[in-house]
Length: 225
Length: 359
Image (cartoon, rainbow over all chains, first blue to last red):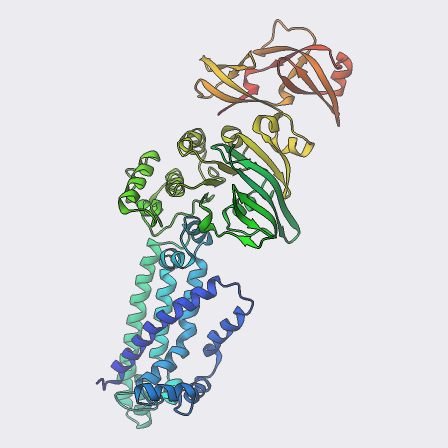
């Protein structure tokens, strides 16, 4: 069991980023090709977490996953434990909270791929799904990396939603941002300073690494041939 | 009898409409969709490929219905089996030359796939480039890879959207000469979109002239150039006299060209003996009553005036000298020389005013 809040945060961010790739790529792919008139509503829903106060979002998530709700009771029946104030609950909340930070760069990436590349693949007999997997995705690596990094970083830095949905249970839901808050409340400024600095250095390191890689990708695969 | 491609479609855009009704024989020949930009040529081509859906009408390829408004049918691009060549090639930037050519060849065995790719590499002279990154290729190389990729699937109909327009001038001239020969062995009908009359004359067998979304004229290429059915068409094709002919011999930078048993001398820019399209602008022809003995013009033809048509300040004379040829002169000249139907005249044309297009 991980007791270090920093490691727990990294674990949460990694799990959430991975899930966001699984959910965000099909969602953004669908948004990039659909001609549905009500597409803007889906886009608005995806973007909501950007403008909503984390406490509002956290409140609704907490209510909808509580054992009194249908989702919450179903989870309780299947797994034998409740979602709120647990690591899986945190994952659910963080995925929703970071969704726009993955979907929007993915979507921008997919939409920046020259449409004629897809058309060329169609005339060569490739289905829409095959075209998306073999042409669109490989041509939007920079957008995918950006989405991955942003959702990782955003999950690492979240506070309000985590506090409402996960509470402050060491080893299970006490992530690094909450432990810093705790330390400050307990007037342990030196410890809070150390944790903050660790988080700052770590975040900066990850972002630099990814942006450096991203730049390299850009030079290998420019957006338009 | 050869199967036919029936095109009868209409597509609406804000403020303009594209409509075309025509029938093409599905034989290995070249049809040129010709016209200025914005004429609707590319829209027609994209509708044929299934990349765009018309708003009305139908497209039938032999017995297959590709699109029909009434029957609510629209076959996907994947099922049509056309080869579409994009103006800027649309090569996949993350795949090598070889992988571009063999993209989605899934319905044949691996051996057959490799054989086909090897054949394409051979035909389009890509052997040194097989494993290269697309980004590192020159314009001409990209063009050959795009053609190879399009043809590797053995399409039933080849659609070329301005295939030479993205090339620099020397490559364009070279490929214009090569393209017809390269594609001959594939024995498929080709529809070419272009706004370049040299390209149309070099490559086309039949020409459909479009302007503002409608078809102005549709017929054998020499006929469309020589006998534009209206002034707009004449303005678009820009050359009144076009004849099929052939270069008999070459000497001192000149080519001796035969048209209907008449021999003409033309300035030759590197063409070999063989079939050519010969173009002469009506305004480059000088009319005289008697045969000239001292003239720098290399070509003199005797003929009889068949028709006289007034065109604003000019007069268009159609002269029969074994074949019909148009000349443009001023009204004053016509009056002074008393030119009228059935009068016998001499036409003089400088060798440099005779344009040759390899065909």
